Length: 486
Image (cartoon, rainbow, N blue to C red; front, side, top):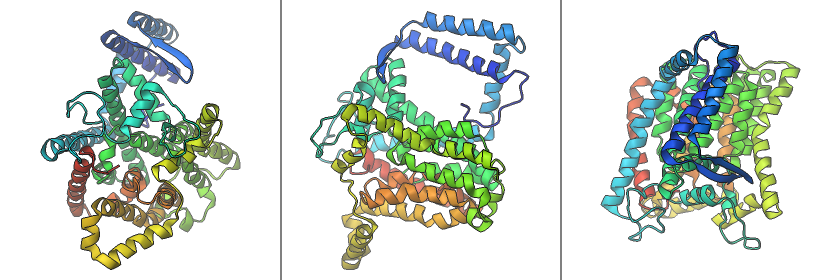
């Protein structure tokens, strides 16, 4: 599955290029196994073992011989490096690299310095994952412990204890990837911390590439695409893209599913959609905007979404095509059903993962309670009292207002499906849990940032980015010093 979109021209058939990539991956895998010693583990009940670099190299050599016998020209050592270099030279990849380095490293540095300068809330961290070293333990914050626990020991369930927080509420895609990468790195506690960080940053890099390509296709402007990447990475709650959290993976799979869907590449969109459904509980709801995108050629222009809807060349007004499109759109829901089937086997209740959210305080109260409570706080104490007594609540409210305010212009400029994507990712969590993690949920709503980058005058973009990053630094200081920023 390519995350880069169009590839450089090549005389090789697609199957030969796929074998070349597989050979390259096997060689890199052999180097990792030789360096860190390989691993043995169970994955979904299956025993997986990789301990010999020589066996991996032998497979790479055998595949290479078959490939060169069937397609001798050009040889792998000429074709693969050329294609890889061409991919990395694309504007999307260069922008993603710059944005990643310029935003993730400073935020991690701010978090580390905040620990040194301000210390922890309560004087010491609630738990440590590695050792008594604040730098080595920097990424061990809040939900990271749950993800790493799943990556190391798998899922567990204690029946008859609904008041206890249990790890089945966390979906499997991210911890599975962390488990595989961390085992390759040796399987020690530092390996799991490093593996989780690498998975999060790698997924965020891929997401930035896709955001750039999506924005360029929808808006038709390279400069807007570049600034959309910057605005998303600079957003105050983008700090979670460098944390050992699933947000990076969810963002990557969601934007990739939309990108390929609107280009008519349904198989790729479906594959990414399946990953969406396995990444986070609200992921299954992404099927709704994808289905709206599928029927958008039948909708009137004012409803389908203004100028952007006219540029969706991959979407067709063809009943036979619609069947495949609906199948691809259903894949996020299929991902949720796959996980529910696993939970059914583990607990006897396919929806135990949903019921478990009550232990985190996620119970339906409706949006009215959320709004009236904040209104009462403001009307009785004023803005100063609200900000001084509930600063983190104010930060979450600001993020929610920002993304919800973009839904109407997103619908008009990008399309109805993208506005619905924003609403279904924000309104259900707000109705069942209030502002708990609301800022984090808002960070993955990429259509809001594409529209925002397009709507802002060019002279205002640097100022907004600077303001975003300043608040993100504040949020990072709160998060890494164990304040309730999660």
